[in-house]
Length: 114
Length: 114
Image (cartoon, rainbow over all chains, first blue to last red):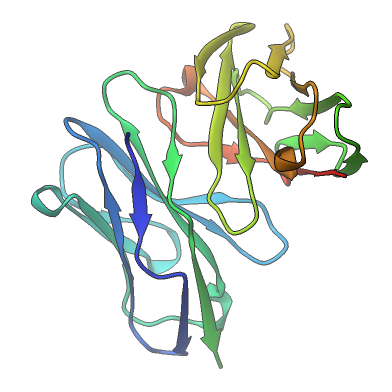
């Protein structure tokens, strides 16, 4: 079965530290990849997405993710986190072959300490 | 511009009862997806509606059914409730027939089954 794995359940960082959240997927073939974020008290919202082309994708608020096909990975990065980045981050994947179903990972809770 | 709205926000039911959850998509969106999010888990795809028909379904039993109306709003019905149905139910809408995979989520309906 298709699945998405997120390596870290909870990450705690100090402000200005660099961030990398791991995500691996098990899809074969073409895949669309997403990172969604849920800030405290808010709904899930799209951070960035990859469909094709440049494997380095830039999203909102200075986030970026790199698609490495050989490693089935789509890790999220940010060079310097802020307190306002405290949130839960979900990686999601969808088969590129006409599927509309997104499969989500379990999420990583990020806490940024001022 | 109203985003995705869901009702009710919270509800409590007992085992064996039936529940109906409602969703109004973001203005201009024509596709509605429903996800179940259990505590500590990522959202799980239940099904997607487009043009008033169920277009794709996840691994959920027939107790879960839905409907999409001509104004694109949608309902999720769950019959014969089980304790394990306790979860946050998320509605997500998308435009362009859902091709882009970008989902706009509502705040969710939290269902507790006693």
